[in-house]
Amino acid sequence: MSLHVTFGIDPGLTGAVGVVIDGQAGPVLDMPTMTVGAKTEVDPRAIAAFVKQVRQEHPGATFSGCVERVRAMPPKEGRRPGAQSSMNFGESYATAKTVLAVMGIDFSLAEPASWKRHFGLIGQDKDASRLLAITRFPSVADQLKRKRDHGRAEAYLLALWHQQRHLVGAMAA
Image (cartoon, rainbow, N blue to C red):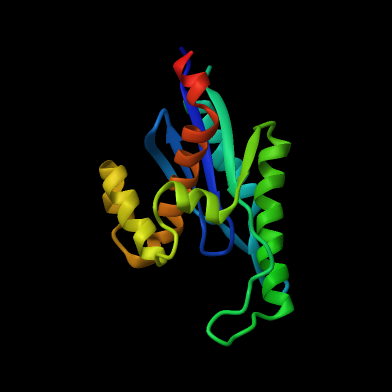
């Protein structure tokens, strides 16, 4: 029986890439960024290097991924995000999907409402994801202690959601 290693990706400049190995938290990478002109973008080479390193550390494992599906940002509290910020978020999402695809890793797309409903997080703020991840993965609580670590927490939860929803039969076999 081989290990199942899943990359969970919370796209966006404050997101992260979290790894879950057979239901347990592995390494996490805050979303790497680079400057392109006057703009900050997600760094696909740094994500690919992280994925490559994890693959090398787990020879013979089965790899998969899960990227949170994003859409144009809706108005929030009377504020409408600008077209540019929506475009930037979309670019981060596309970068995450492209890295996994180019590296030959099958992945699912998780609607926020779907994976959050699965974990009882609908209507909760981002800190609820962080607190749930600490409860579920106490071994990485130190990496999730700040409120701004919600991207790490959501990356871990996305990977776990994928393993629970898409690999249950494979893991039991």
